[in-house]
Image (spheres, one colour):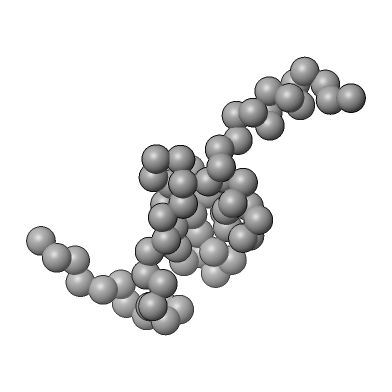
Length: 67
């Protein structure tokens, strides 16, 4: 049987954070997710993970932003 504290801590974990942990990502503390190399790969938006720069090679310069 689960303790009350364990129940509360599991309930506070979002779907995005559970998915990110399964993928081995680490939180940057501001809604962003980093891979094992420290590269920004995703962000939490509306409770779900949104991935960025999927076609970019590791270590490559970030693409120019459209303004």
